[in-house]
Image (cartoon, rainbow, N blue to C red; front, side, top):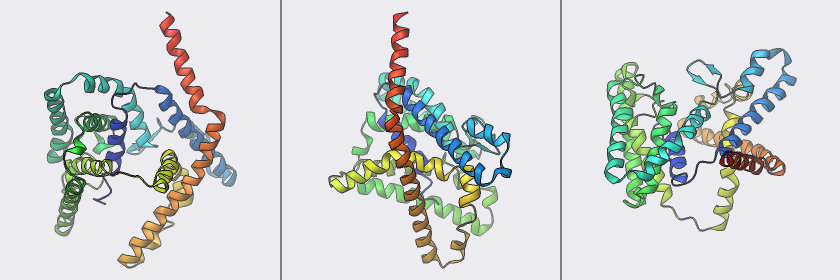
Length: 318
């Protein structure tokens, strides 16, 4: 787990890196929101016809507003919920990235790192700013700003890929070692946030995520086949998340279906987990590829872009 928990941090670092120096376009967020509604409502309808007695009015309401309905600790599609908040705040972060000099950026980064990562981890207390172990808008804003800094100062060029990879591996191994020791001593229940499996705030996962981002940023892809694969899978990754992480799909399709893997020997279990993961990813990718073709046919993105442009023009005329 310690080697993969950097994934969420990396996604937002990429967002901050990509949008650095760019004007905020709200149609992009609207496009993602429509995609969320598309799958939420479609999946509900499909399973309603298969299990009509299992769903009521509350289920319909939950799927109409999936990013605002909360259940338990986190909201449905918590990642997108936090992403929406971060996106709406990002124009102000972009202003800071544009006008701050190197000293101001360094002071801001160190302050954010200490206040929102280091101290909550050491003190095992993240509720002062409602950080929710990283499942929050505020933590996503910190990551977005960091991603912008990676672009602004080209941090990935400061070290070679093998050194960035070493940093990532060391951070992951330290996290794993601490967890293993605490589990062996029976103290894991009282561990700091650093020891939590779900704590994206951990300095080790934060630094490890930055390092892993820099590893891939330094990779030069030239083969046409690899480029084609990336172009195919990149647009559908969000759809993969929406499909397999949908609560209805989880309950009726995925829950307890792969528990048998836990009874295998370690090598077979690892191979089985990889195969299942790849299978789910490919299947969901093909489903979302159809959705992507439909959205292109309906010109969803271009229509929303034109709508936003027309709204700006009307405001300019006042």
